[in-house]
Image 1: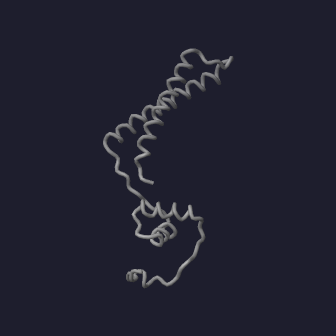
Image 2: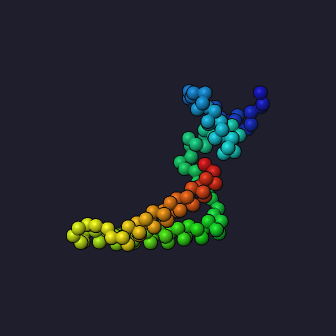
Image 3: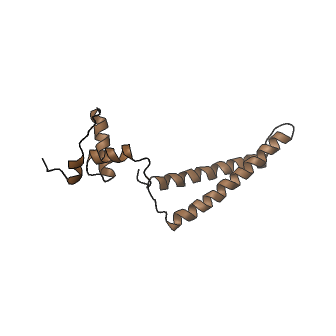
Length: 126
């Protein structure tokens, strides 16, 4: 057993929680992944901090892609509003071929946006 650090010498109170074996393994994995020395430090950090703030640096490529995506999503919103207004204003409530193409194209752009977001969020540490 290692000698206690000065910080540990000052720590006199404790709590006890009961976990399943799998829960403890998950906590230990997260503890190591997030760079904590032990479960106690990890537990204190998670329990006592109101909120951890992590700064994520975005590459220029990512920032440009997000700008393009913002533009595309705004365009989709405008198109959907125009179609909704048309459907609500005119009798018959039917989509013409142009409206159907716009909806299909919007759906394709949304799928691309989702795919891009998924690609980049998979690189963000949890």
